[in-house]
Amino acid sequence: MSAVGISKPQYQLTVAGENALMLYFDQRIDPAISALVQQACALIKVELGEDVIDILPSYASVLVIFNPFSTDLYRVQAQLQHCLAQLQTADSHSGKVVELPVYYSEESGPDLALIARTKNISIDEVIKRHQAISYRVYAIGFAPGFAYLGEVDPLLQMPRLATPRAKVPRGAVAIADRQTAVYPAPSPGGWNLIGLCPTRMFNPQAEPVMPVAVGDEVRFMAIDKAEFLRLGGELPAQLTGAKP
Image (cartoon, rainbow, N blue to C red):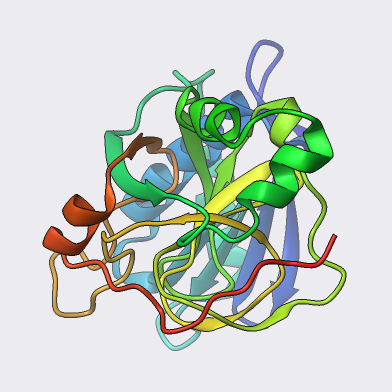
């Protein structure tokens, strides 16, 4: 582990390939660590300039992919060490706040009843608790626009389904363990579905292509079926709940 200074954050920098380096912070889900990841990405982007091909942040790490035709591993290592020396303890609320509408119902969220029954609370309580928290965007992955949001109310934490669904609809709002997310496109999935969001989480024709970025805060707000449809939401032809 390399120290950035007595009072500065700590990190580890490792080689991840011929033209890639991985930056690790303390391996835990924590808003302060996520804020350091966000700060590091901004510093690296400025420091490497056109030599960088991509910067991929996650919960507590950053993958840096550089152009081997314009620079080399040793130069990039030195540049990263230089810019990381500028890291400061970050404000964990430095991103924007994004509100996402959700049509919560047994029609749009077939696992609502399962969660309520498992936790011995009402469906209304599940919906209330899911909306009550502001969620941090910790990472984007699995599919373009799939934002991993945390952390959900401890009472709502649910394991992934034993048998994943073959197809989860676009906009499905779901819970798995300590996280919640919105499926950006139809795909297989094993998370517990509690509603549908009409907002497109990934649109290559839009600018920006995603409404959220790592470090942002997301709040969900309940809407009714009529509003969901008015905002462009689509109800799937068939969406069945998980078996208890």
